[in-house]
Length: 250
Length: 223
Image (cartoon, rainbow over the protein chains, first blue to last red):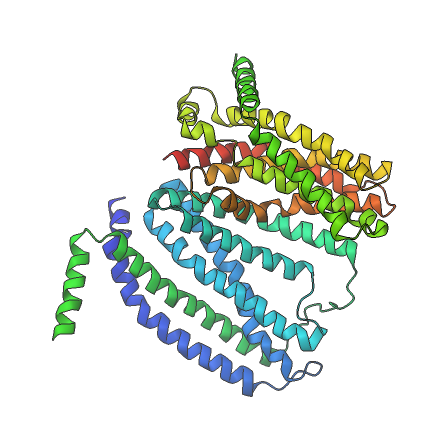
């Protein structure tokens, strides 16, 4: 247990994040550039959708990670509520705004893609609606955190909110699906996922990895600053701050 | 023993609500005003009103219920009674359910009676009216449970009511969707089908899980 405590001490985590950051950053830049290059120029246009299909390389990674990050927040929240590990809460807090951003990117890119392909920016389809509700879940999480001044209460209340929200996601999806299947059949949205060709799949996977590393980069930066903010009383923080001041003067 | 305690909690809350009439009269007024606004907007177009009337009434009930739920814990929180509840030897989830029962009797029941009357005003058919009453009978307790969880999380915050609505909104979507869907299918000449059963199933699941979550949230909010 002692060893474990050492592993999660703020100072150690800060150092790890410092180490990880350049790797995450370089990987995300390389992978995103490579994926975009391949996706834009390397892959032939789609037989039906032409060049429009290239939106997939933004849309799918963002949509995938929007849900993935919410599950990370959920796991962190459970860990925080059960073992009250502060690092878990910091991770959840740092993840939430990136998750909301990815959800927004997924919605906007989806709208841009939908206009030429389906002839409409937006349609109240099950998947679109549940993605929108996911955005609302992120917003209510962020809103609750913003509204509670007291650090500990904000952390715990937000954790509970995230857990209830996670349980709610399948319910929402199911209810929305039920509602759309009653209201309208698949008229516009006969868009069953095609088994994608391998040469189109590879840039998609690269972009997915790039988006993940980008999330990791932002996570490192935000967790670092949050750690400094919360531990401002401790010695190691003042050492770091002093070092930075000395460097800038020299 | 425990039943006596719960009964006394219910009685106490009802007495308090009788003393502070604003807390349950104002949401009811809000509900009535919101529903009467719609025929004016729809220019008393009978077809449109008949089509959308049930959904409008459902929405009005949902909104007034959310606004009313902010008050469930407010006074007890300010006077420190809530801390006593948390420290008492009796199970906190059950005590909170008792409080919600009192709230249901004082605000839920009048809303339940009011909804068909408002439906009468919108000239809905008897079949639709009964479907409206039935779905609200199942829907209101679910909404109250979910709303009370939001109220427990946002206890004593300055943004209070609006924050509560924002927090609770995503959780209420399934209940509201199924409730409105059930009434609309009756209004379109169908029968009350699987939706009401799904609503009932959701109520049972919420009844088992949410009180515990409310208790946890209260403990978090009280620190």
